Image (cartoon, rainbow, N blue to C red; front, side):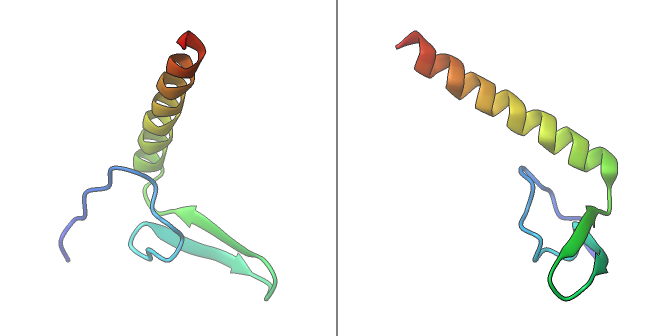
Length: 59
């Protein structure tokens, strides 16, 4: 299996990234298979949001 490169957090339909922890029929809990990659992608996303927000404030 080839390693996929992620640039953002994928939807929960990506079973290579997410692991179904539990499901009761109404609610499903997904956890990332690689917690370090998930943390890095979250930090990257937060930095992008902060950059967009600061640009809007400057205008």
